[in-house]
View 1 (cartoon, rainbow, N blue to C red):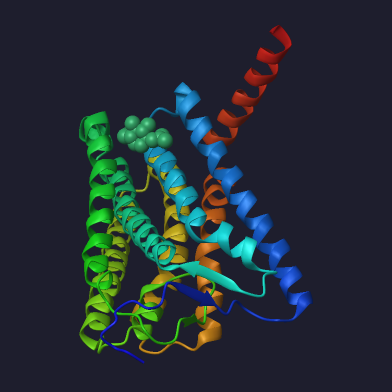
View 2 (view 1 turned 45 degrees about the vertical axis):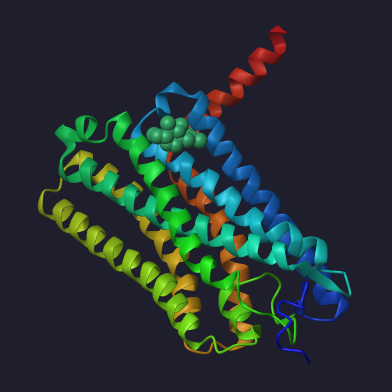
Length: 312
Ligand SMILES: *[C@@H]1O[C@H](CO)[C@@H](O)[C@H](O)[C@H]1NC(C)=O
């Protein structure tokens, strides 16, 4: 093969999961249900927070932002995967592949920063309740959400700048159902060891770093609550447990994915499914089923909608 002719590969082919028809059907039903459920659930959160003035507080604004990010996150890979399940030839163009990687890293990075902002919000609410509204001003909230998008975009661009020029000339089979950086690098026909190291440092360090930061801040908050137990802080504690659950579920698979040297491909795919379908679905479940204010707001929104329809 002529190695001077760069980028002969114009598309990549996914192997998917399995060729067994039964499992494909099961997978289709499972992913379709979870994808629809997470889109619906997150959409309901965004609507409720936007239209219910009782929820116009920093915590709920950040939560609505998280829901938007979750919707983008699962839409990057899930629709294509669902459409591909029954296809024999699951192909994606080179551009499509780069686009998937770009958005999944941008959105993933944004979500990490936003989770840190949400932890900071809980810290202020629990440890400095009297200054909550002055510290978490609307301007501060906006600053948090804009900063999180900027950091996400930079994180993603920094990695892609190096990948976009790589020569792809040989095999184009990805043993997966979506494009990810570690697998794509292994297909390039140059030595990508340094690049792989850069990706591990960039993605791995960011996810492990944010996770450690979050765990420390949660331990700190829990310690403060434990020292000054009061009514207000026990209410704050219940929202805190929801945050901790989300953080563990979001970072667990990611950290494994980017820091484990050579993951076995089955566990790998299973974790990827978990991150793509279950985590975005769990956010609304955790935040709404466990949160009284949110449930009341949804009921109020519902009755307002019904009322509105009856008038018109
Ligand atoms: C995201 O956060 C900003 C800043 O608080 C807020 O103005 C905006 O409404 C939020 N987005 C959504 C969809 O709620």
